[in-house]
Image 1: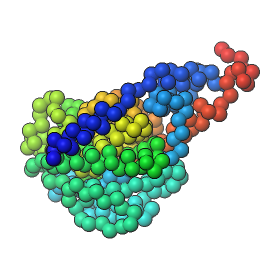
Image 2: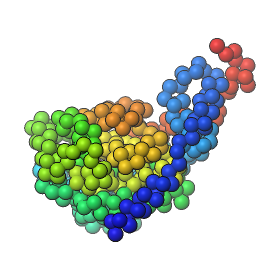
Image 3: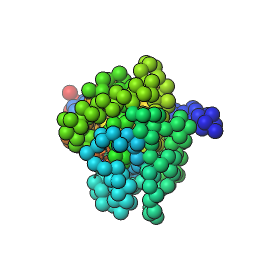
Amino acid sequence: METQAYNHLLDVIQAIHPFDDEAAKLALKHSDSLTKPPGSLGKLEAVAAQLAGISGKLWPDLSRKAVIIMAGDHGVCEEGISAFPQAVTPQMVVNFLNGGAAVNVLARQAGAEVVCVDIGVIGHIEHERLVSRKIVRGTANMAKQAAMSRGDALDAILVGIEIVNEQINRGSRLFATGEMGIGNTTASAALTTVLTGLPPEESVGRGTGINEAGWMKKVEVVKRAIEVNGLHAAGADPIDVLAKVGGAEIAGLVGVIIGAAASGCPVVIDGYISSAAALVASRITEKTLPYMIASHQSQEQGHAKLLDAIGLTPMIQLDMRLGEGTGAVLAFHFIDAALLLMQEMATFESAGVTKG
Ligand SMILES: Cc1cc2ncn([C@H]3O[C@H](COP(=O)(O)O)[C@@H](O)[C@H]3O)c2cc1C
Ligand SMILES: O=C(O)c1cccnc1
């Protein structure tokens, strides 16, 4: 079964097209012909070129968008590493489904679909809009044992691929990663430390708002999880690391990223947890990297260095530290703006403006 799942993943990876450098160059050339000093639209020009390189078109139609929120619980919560109780995970899932969370407000404003997936919540959630693809009933406590089996991690990745494909079949072409899972900044810090070598003192942040003593305990828990799971060796297998110190929702997002790339769709990465998923995806295959757009730099300690290690530059900085996909959905506006500028601006020639 595990081999079958892995082979399926390899097939999906095989389908990822390389970035179209020619199309990106053409987009930059077009951008330089528009009535502005070259490069003056900064990251908007860079993202427009990236979107051209992804799609092979000067300005792809990305009007249909979706944020995919993966939800899962974390056994490591029993170590007391979050400011909030684990029960908040299913409660927030219901809030997403009823349209009351921050990400719902922002998605409505951005004209994006919200897809909420139970991929690893402990309890049963009954709701007509919930996408139920439970792989685990919460992870095990990574400070004592592996959070998941390798098979579960692979299955969760495949769920992410399936979900993104379903949304592509319904017409979405631009994706945002979102997540909900009390305790998941601890898992994200552990993934960051193991896969980038950043010390826990730098990868562990305050998450939902723990105090200094809570932070020190969280650092110790991450160190213990790495020790218990024997994850010191450099060049570790990213799927193995994901299984041992990750989470089902993080694995699901790894699948969303790989699946979007395989279908030629850009995927906007949210905050610290989503970036940990992006790190794992990029370590599974570098081919995913050109499809990723980093939305914002979270306040979570370690996020800037994590993005840097992946090789991503965030578009915006709003001092947010929420997750859910909120920063990524906000970045949709800037992506829309970049595409509109490419399409609607006059050229020096058409407007009769003298070039420098
Ligand atoms: C009400 C509420 C809504 C949230 N929405 C996202 N998160 C965020 O906080 C959690 C990670 O922080 P930690 O690792 O400290 O538990 C994740 O669920 C993340 O999405 C929330 C947290 C809370 C409390
Ligand atoms: O950056 C994030 O995504 C984040 C930070 C703190 C808490 N929850 C999410």
